[in-house]
Length: 118
Image 1: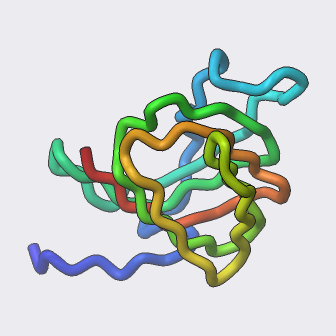
Image 2: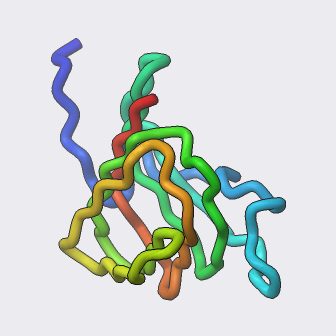
């Protein structure tokens, strides 16, 4: 194993249907998103890959990971509780800290590279 992975927006073996967003976290009026993804690294403490979701909105209460994400396509608006909304689009990167509380709204089908650590 080379311990080097080239990340491609379509994943090294394509994107597969997945379900990451729990129905109970959806905001009123939000439909369950259609999700696809590819995990490229997972060692029990960290996970990295590609994730895509159609528009939806959810609430995070005490987000359980540190997450760094790079938007490949689409748009997401993240609003910390008591803070200003920030939108991210193609080519932009965000870092969300463990314990984040607020809303996460995909406004255009979002595809992102992500890396999470507990």
